[in-house]
Amino acid sequence: MTSFAPDVLTTVTGTAVLHGSIRDPSLIVRLPPGARHASNPALPLLDWLRALPDARFDADQAAWVVRGTGPNAQARFTEAGIRIDGLDVGEFSGVTTIDALYSPMTLLSDDERTVLVRHRFAGYEQALEMVGPAATWDKTRRLLKVPVVDVLAAGVPRPGVLWDSAAVDRAYALHAQTPLVPGLEAAAARLAAAVDRSGVEDEVRLVADGVGHYPDWWGMPPMAHQVPGALAVAAGHTLLADEPGIGKTVSALLAATVSGCRRLFVTCPPVVATHWAREVAKTGFALRDRHHGVNRSPCGALGAARSAAAASACRTGESANKMPTFSLGDAQTGPEPLRGVQGCTMTETLQTSRCKPELPELIGDCESLT
Image (tube, rainbow, N blue to C red; front, top):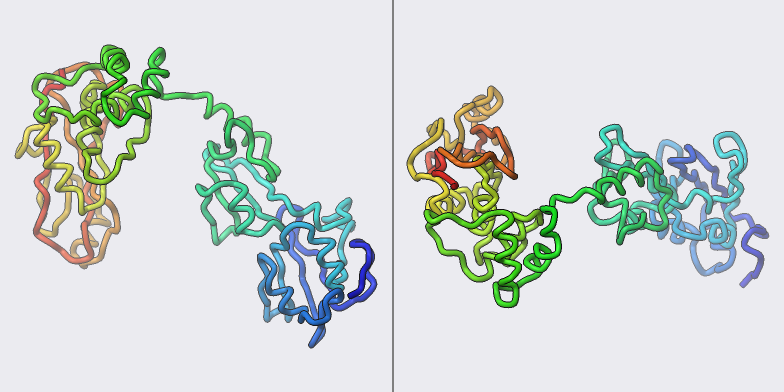
């Protein structure tokens, strides 16, 4: 086996031309037939190339296009015997090694909600690990989109990524915001971590005094585990993630009630729309069979305001491919809403690609929440 310094090419088995831009570089690689790895002649160079994180053959160019090399690419290409042309010229002036093009580059989007990430030579898989699992891939633009809040991990920018300074500043600003009720942060945190009321009765009383108690008309006495969860949400925690079947729907309705919510907007899959309606009726949150502008169409749709697109889809049997959304109306009396979606209206969406007459019983005007 030949041994040589990583930056000294002793045997040329193929060529690679640096292409693209600083933000989106690629290598156009051409190999002679039957080429072997310069440092490991038993290894076909084509097999080595295919094993790179992002390498595909482009028939139009009759060459391999490499957009992901993995780390230490300069040394690995040199050891393989592949000469890299195009460094330190033109667009890549000042770039003397392809390792300088490894770390993903980012740019804060115009709406300041997402960060656009070019994976560069780190490749898609490695870049995804760097920026977090919330990232999504934009096939058209060939880049990752990351929520701004995910720029930070454990309070600092995620390592290994060249973060746009504007994105970092925006992420810090968002992390500084909190939906928690001032003065109840510690108590709400304990309630959010509690399995039931035991050991957190003081926090239950403190938070309930701060955000509200459930009213006398509430039709389902809450279970021990639902009280701390509902109060934690009412105090500003935004995720209710219990196991299936132990009462998250009721906990969510209880949280909305003690918060003084006068209008609630629910978005859910069709399979649980009936469940939501039944739970609302059981709790007394709204009066059953009093439909608030609800139009029960014969095509199995929910809502009062039918859009032209939904009407067309209903006539043709095509699916609108949307989740049912419905409003529980306004409370007759009570304080102004403290949280939740306000100004909701009934909207119509189709449940399936075939018209069905079956509909869940929708709930209309809310009872008083005071």
